[in-house]
Length: 429
Ligand code: CMC
Image (cartoon, rainbow, N blue to C red):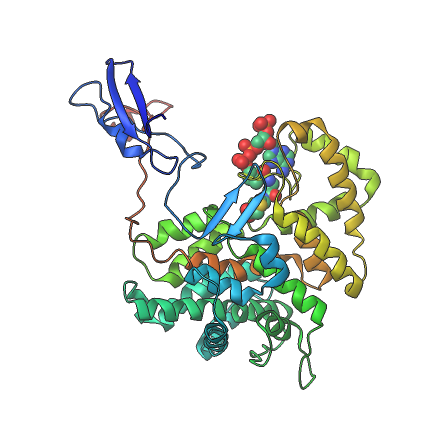
């Protein structure tokens, strides 16, 4: 039986080091002892996109990209998507275990009573341009909530932290819906606490003059399943933003604003918006070969394909593809589906995509479902942020977290003397 250590020889000095291996990882700080002389700072590890660097230890989500496995707290995503609901999953993520019946009833009640936002937050929303992007509005207003709850700064107070977790999960749909209604110039609809989490969101988005909004049960469930699938995904770009910003001990509203901002980008939560725009641009199945050629020539990306971690298939994409057909039973078939299916078929047979292990990811079909449910593309990243809030806040309690402060490999100029403007040449030197 071998030892759980790594032997390293520094060929610059001939020195040997034995580094402990713990949970399949070595501590980067172990390399600092490797120096060419006493003045040397020590060896750094260089990993600009954290492609092989664990930034934390976590018991929340397990992901095996080669095998296409995703589990929250040990439960396979397929089982949760089939048997659970978003609120229960949010409890699981934030508490570590599934709730008992009594715990669930209390949790649902506690979330529900926090769905309203302060009237001043509503006024704040009104200040945005009529055509403001709802995700931009969400980023700003969720950050602004910290000014309504100054006690949220007490991040080590367990009671306060639990309260802010509930507030955040509960208020994100309300902020999202208000942002949507604002962009349409429609009056805001207040939460209906008789409805489910996703049913209430549909109510706040779509209710008009009817006395009571009754969500379609298929669409309500489909939205809930989409929320389960998007609830967490271990250390992705926005989770990393949440951790990095939260590590400064700022309040969770400000950290979530940073996470939302990260999610806004087209390579992350903005990808389903990009997928829809791409499908619309392609416009017709017969244009697909030309489009694929342009992607292969480096003229653009096939949005909704590829993943930093999944190199075989994205288990969420399989669930979403099935869900799409259930939604279309109610809404009618989205014509973009044919383009998506053909695009997928061609890409999966193409050497370029096979070689690079590029497969449909969660965003490839989610946009088509959202569009069929009546959401404009600008709402897609917002619909991602609502459920991901549970995953973000599940990370709030990490005793090992210190302020995130990466090192850099400096490759700039050596020390040099400042020259006055009159003495500088054309390159400034
Ligand atoms: N279309 C065409 N080529 C691609 C794509 C794509 N979607 N994704 C990666 N490649 C190519 C890339 O050009 C590179 O080629 P080469 O080796 O010739 O330079 C190779 O595949 C490896 O790609 P990479 O950029 O090094 O991979 P990454 O792990 O850094 O990026 C990714 C992962 C998700 C950012 C990327 O695949 C991508 O940009 N996909 C499109 C955007 C997208 O769908 N994002 C949603 C991700 S899932 C939801 C979420 O996490 O938010």
